[in-house]
Structure formats: structure tokens, C-alpha cells
Length: 301
Length: 332
Image (tube, rainbow over all chains, first blue to last red; front, side, top):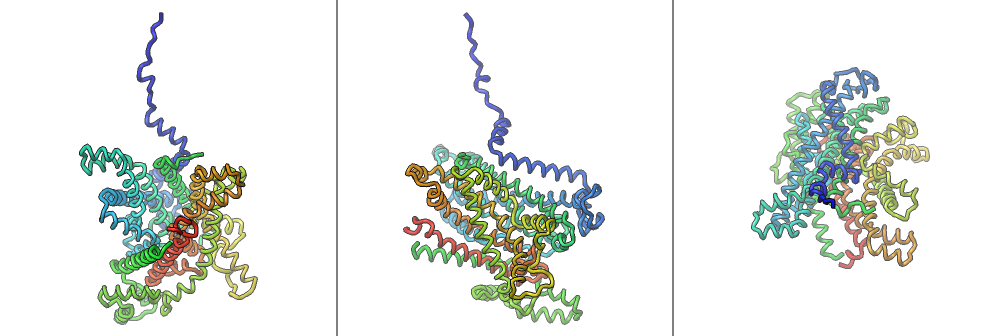
């Protein structure tokens, strides 16, 4: 007789590691994967660029004027004598800074207000909700034009840009988080936690918040997208920090010097392509996260 | 839709306009910038009048703009002006009023905006519907789906790409401005075609730049609707594909799409304005651009407030269309 060896528990119930699971998920959610991939390339471009180039070359009068792309200046130079490769690296870095800063603050305000509003309800809830509803239909960018225009030109920096953008951009995440907390509040696990005597803050931080993470992540990416977008538009209108090589500023400068009329096509085109990659990757990630957060809208095809 | 809801919506509209006006009133007054001083400081540098005269001039202008009165009085007066759509005088083109400047620029913007928004909305909705419709021919679906990628290319960037490829490389269409240099506006077909050829690229950038969003939202909705029982039922009843597509599929997606349009209005209008500025068309966008470049603050605030009010009014107007689209709203 042969003895049958029972398979040990480990081999039978092998749970793939989190990394493998994440990898498998990314293979199913192609948009998310492509978005992450483009974003990774952009990050690498910026980080390696920051190590290799001299940031000073991103500012006027540091290179020959109006040179088309060549071996010496891979992306050409502009009318004011910026090396556009350096300008793109620094501009990308500044765009990321504005996006992350404004996105982070906006999401944080949204999460705090959304939670307060939904969890405590009553007068607090209706006040926050009504303020959000009144502010939402106002075209945010135009109000940002007023704010940025009222500032002294010297006061406009990357950081004030981020603040201007965030000032009127927290309503979206507030309403989203509020709606999610409202539905989650009614779920059974919250009721169980309440019955077992957990405190309000315990329930918020230990029960609700972890379940909200995908939504918060999606809201964050959405906020970063909106912030990059808004700061880009402001800069294209000439309301950005004019000295900085922010992507929108480069386009504004190219436009005011009539770059296409004069045949300096590379000047406005490069920041435009960079912007497409940034916005495109963020949009893909945002859609991918939506799918992760709302399994109900996961592909039915 | 009963009277109570209508009154409620109108009250809300007034609240939105009030909030926007209040922000536009207080933000500049919190800032340390003095618009009049900057403007006349500039003039005095070029015109060469003495500093004492400058101070006198600034004081008299301050008085004329009512800036010497207490804040509350200014605020009340300002709100009263807003109600009458009076945004004061332009500093750059004094003595023109801001309202006059807006009135001159507005027809251009309305023309461009109306055509591009309607076209991109219709094209986007149809493409999105087709891309999610399982019975559509394969070639149609493969044609429609890639338009989603345009979501990542906002109108302003689309404008730069189009100017480069179509205007600069192929030289098919002009690079910018309203009509060719040296042409005097007149009522002839030649001028009309010249005018239109300058409108094609801006219009195309606005259409292509916003069509992706409509494709995406319609496609999402289409996928959900397909699973609905009433669509299955219609299929089993033996209705033709076209009938189901039109009456069951598009019809049910219309309400969310129009809601989306109402929500997107602000972005749509802003994009149009910036694109106009980029192409140098004589619309609101160029007015705003010029005002920003010349520190003409009353015009900046006037334009911003005017557009805000227009967007809020349009949004409310769109909401009044809902009952036409959804019988459930009509009856309640």
C-alpha cells in the first residue's frame, strides 16, 4: 500500500502575491496600464532631465536664439534664447508640482468636507451642499482669471498658481466623497461597528475610510488633471508666472511672438505634445481607477 | 414641471449670479493692485505729464469709478449695475463701456460657439452610440471607437496641432486672424469665403477637441442601456434594429447627455474663448486677451462676469428642456 500524502496547506491554497494580483489586474484594465506607462515615461524624462540638464538653460538668454532642433539643441531654442529641452524638463517638473500640490490640497479639503457633511448630516450637511451647488455652475477658470489678474505680477509663482487653482476646485471631490459616505453609512458593517460601541472617529478611520480609498484615489487623479488643465489655460492666457518655463507659458510666449507666422514651428508644438501626453495619461488613469472603484461599471463586453 | 420647481430653479440662478458677482467684486479689492494707477502710470511714462497731475488725475478717476465711497455702498451700487448689465467703463478703450465692447465681440463668439457645440455634441453622441452598439457594422465601430482618444487633447492644444499640420505644413488654411490682411470688410461673396476660411480651423479645433468627451460618455451609457430589460424586450418583440437604436437606445441616453452638456458648458465656453484668442478672431476671447495684456481690469471683470451669467442662464435654460426629454419629470 502506498501512503497518500496530503498536500500541505500552502501548496493547495497558494495566494498569489499582491504584486502578481496587481499585475493581473493591470492586464485586464488596459487603460490604467497604458496611463501608468506614459506617466512613468514622463516622470523618467523629467527626473533624468533634471539630473542631466542645467536648469538655468530653461530661462531666457542662455542659448542661441531661434535655433531649430539640432544635435546641439535637440528641441531647438526660442525667441528669448531658452534651450527648449531644458525648458521642457523644468516646465514638466513645475507642471507636476502644481498638479500634485493643487490636487493634494483639493482632495484633502474634499475628503474632510465630504466626510463632515455626510457623516454628521443636518445643518452642516445642507450648508456645505448648498455652497458646493452654488459654486459648481460658475466657470471656475474665469474666476481664476480674475484672481490671477488681480495679483501683482511678482506674486505669481508656481505656488500661488497652485493655490489659485485649488481655491475653486474642491467642490467636485466634496460632492463625490459625500455621496459615497452617505451610501456607505447605511451598509451593515457600519451598523455592526456602531452597535459594538465603536466611536465616531473609529468608524470613520477604521471602517469607512479604507473602503473609500479607491474613490479618493480617483478623486485625486481627477483633481490633478483639473489642476494641470486649469493652470495650463491660465498660463496660455498670459496669467502664469511669466518668467517660468511652464508649458502653458511657452505656448503663450510662442503665440505672442507669432511663432507659426515666422516659421518657428517647434516652439509651440513641443509643449503641446507634452501636454497631450500628460493629460492623456491622467485621463486614462482616471478612467481606469473609476472602473476599479465602481465594479458595477466594469466592462460588460 | 410645476411652478414651484421653476421658481426654485430661477431663485437658484439668482443665487449663482450673486455669488459670482460677489467674488468678482471682492477679490480685486483684496489685492494690492490699483488698476487706475497702473493704467495712468503707464500713460504718464509715454505721455509725459507731471507726477502731480498724475495724482490729481488718479483721484478724479477714482471718484468717477466710485472707488472713494465706503465699501458697502460700492457693493450695493455694483450689484445694482450688474442687474442692468452695466459693467462700467473700459480703461484701455475709454470712453467705451465694457458692455459696448462685449456687444461688439459677442456675435462672433456666439456664431462660433453655437455651431461647434451643436456639431460636436451631435457627432460625439452618434459616434459614442455606434461604438457601443453591438449590432452596428464592424467598420462603423472600428471607425467610431478611436475618437475616445481625443479626450486627452483639449481644444487649445488641438488648435496648435491643426495650425501646424493644416495651416503651416499643408498651407491649406490661414494661420489666424478674422480675414486676410489688406482686405476691407464688405458684403461680397469673396469676402464671405475669406471670412469662412478663417473660421474653419478654430471651429475644427473646438469640435475635435470636445467630441471625445461626448463619445466617451455616450459609449458608457450605451453599454449600460444594452443590458436593460426594455431593450431585450424590444428585441424579442421583433422591432427593427434602427427603431431600437433610435427610440430605445438614443432616447434613453438623451437625458444624461443633455445634463452632461449643461455641466460642461462652463468648460466649453472657456475653451472657445481661449481658442478665439489663440487665432486672433475678433470675439470675446480676443477682448479678454487684450484686456489682460493691457491691464484693463474693468473689462476683464466685465467679460468674466458676463460669461458667468450667460453660462448660468444657459444651464438653467437647458434644465427646462429636461421635461421634454423625460416624461417622468413632466408628470411630477
